[in-house]
Length: 333
Image (cartoon, rainbow, N blue to C red; front, side, top):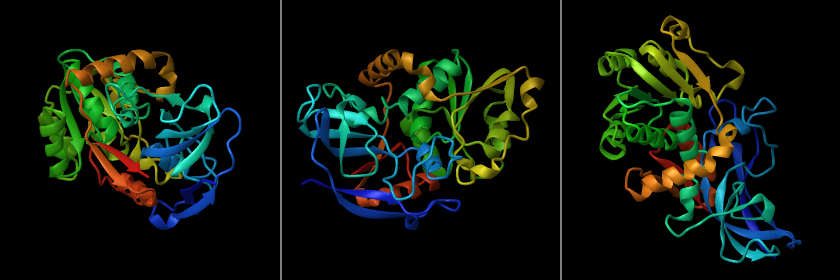
């Protein structure tokens, strides 16, 4: 009998999640049935959407029940198979959940190719919640043109890091917003941003005005709140504002603070569009092909922050929400 260790939601967070909101439990897995596979979970993707699923029915990205493993996408390795579609040793992508082992029907999983990139790349640069999200928001919704001035919030995070690099590939001048000098140095020295704005260092509005005196052509937002307002106050005529996420709001979804300066949109003949990546599923093959090519050419990289041990999944959620990482945050159970 195979056992699994899992991170379980024991109570819904009151504001910012803390480790005490979760528990680590061990359980036996049932026998495999026809069409199913037993997986050893190798890497879990720590994404901002997880925070919203911890709330009740009002969760922006759905909800989960108290007493169940926390939702998480991941990469698993087939240990045993009762499916003709997957064999022992295959790497697969799917809804692994915060656990060390899991049984799923093979139809719920995608076999991933490991010839050119590690399997975990399908959580990062090629991941639906990371690289493909950045592509859909920046290149499809943002419609970047060569010479644009592009600003990205939460730019040192997983989606933001890829979004910055995609804008550079498209020929834009890129300004990343992050918190603290280390993250700003990461943006300019590792990710390749032209400039970085530290929102913790003072007046972000004034900093953006100095860095983009002719205005922001495209703003890719992962934060919301005051950061969104600072960008709106500095958009150029005809600007495109792309709403990818609003992590500053996720700890209190019942009292979301909207932009105070939204009237900059009509004043400057600009537009604002929100999106979720699943709306562009038919374009995933092209997105993956493009990103894979840029990885091979050395034009895209995504540093990883890997937390070892499934028991540390709760601390990884806390790290994500406190901004204590750079690049792609993963847990290796």
